[in-house]
Amino acid sequence: MLSFLYYIKPLFLPPTSLILLALIGWGYRRRWPVLGRRLMTFSVIALLLLSLPLISGGLLRSLQFHPPLDPAQPVAGNAAVVVLAAGMYRDAPEYGGDTVDGLTLERLRYAAKLHRDLGLPVMVTGGIVGDIETPLAVAMAKALTEDFAMDSVWTEPASRTTQENATHSEALLRARGITTVYLVTHSWHMPRAVLVFETAGLRVIPAPTRMSEAFELSLGDFIPSAGAFYDSYYALHEWLGQLWYRLVYT
Image (cartoon, rainbow, N blue to C red; front, side, top):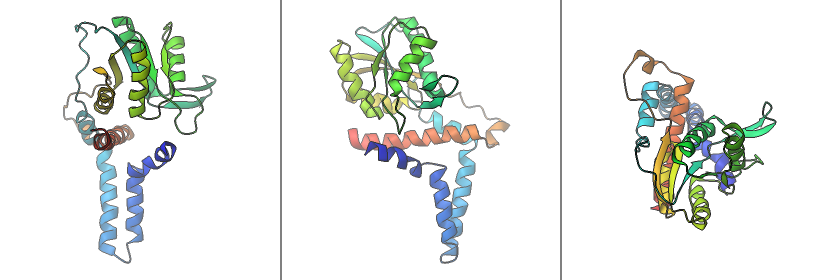
């Protein structure tokens, strides 16, 4: 079931959803010309707006509920750093196989810093996504030990969703006497992650990375870019995920 959802999820998100909507409008252009034109016009305008840094930045900032971790904050007892997976760079020829993607690497870099600063153990969580054979947690642990010179990393390689990240990690951590986690993920993913980890019974100290910049209007905010559309995609993905998780888990 989860594999099925993994493949149909893009149908509900841009650009696929908007392209499909435009095609439906094109199909209606003769039978219901007004409706067809409106659907196609809406799709084009939505694609344009989501490509503007002005819009994508606002969408990301709307998810930034948690501030950066305060370095002066005392280190919590019975705690560990938990890093959530993002995605995989499949069959990377320069690495000789599967490895972590850019988003996951950003999270790992910050987790390695927290490990040095706080002196806490690190757990990485993430299972097999799609048809990739390597669990994300395995690739994450390899990156931390080989690229960031960490001695050891705890792994949770079975989870396939953020909710499973929480429940599986909680079981492994509680067996080690750990009830508090410094949760590392992107700032836009943090609200949903905190929700499910707290629901699983853990005390969560958010440690977000890649904070959105403060808003300062500039000419570049009105120039469409692929990077802005990329940010809009992740923001909409998170708002959709939050809606689903709050319906199911609260």
